[in-house]
Length: 184
Image (cartoon, rainbow, N blue to C red; front, side):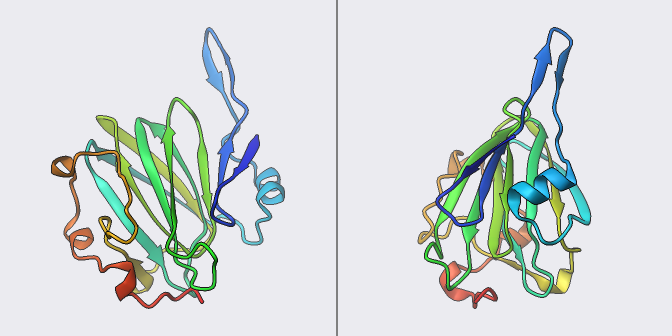
């Protein structure tokens, strides 16, 4: 696998080695020791999540507050998304900056997000199956969110605004400037 650093400390794009032939392909999507060594992981992944969404859905920007903050290892098994991470660590030199990466079943890329990132994605294909590993359990009382269309973030979700489909909860998310970041 190849690890590609991004402009945000700790956020990396993983390009697995894919072996393909006329029958299809094979790749190792996770190996705990190799990933722990390559990503300098201190906590094991303990929960796997999967969602299915249709074109135009934007999920996020979500995060879990300490002590239930989560690092995530993200991939797409069917379809394509634009995956977005926003640095919400107040002491970080990249606080308030984001990265956006296309993840798809075709490119097999994975995205690793350390704790302290708000995360979201937009569905670019007709349908997507999205999977991610977490290093902490989900706790509803610890969830937080930031508005997907916060003008200070200026995220291009690669979707026409009229096509965006949001949950009721995501429609009510505050701006980054209006949250107290729990990641000091």
